[in-house]
Image: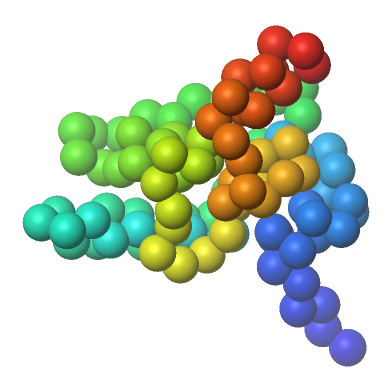
Length: 100
């Protein structure tokens, strides 16, 4: 039987515990700007070096704001340190990084 778990479900269940960030089909529509992020999916393994690069207006800041729960995704899910980004308080992200 094919596995149908999403990246976010695997992160929440602990089977992707080695992933620091998991984005699964994340999209964001901003009023006046339209679709800023469309079905973005990626994983950042613990201990890895990760860079987010792209041209102006590509959605880099929007993605980071979404991961820190400053804004909500229009669709999809993201997890940071195994916690759904929708439930994070922005201060938790900073404290977890400093303590970790």
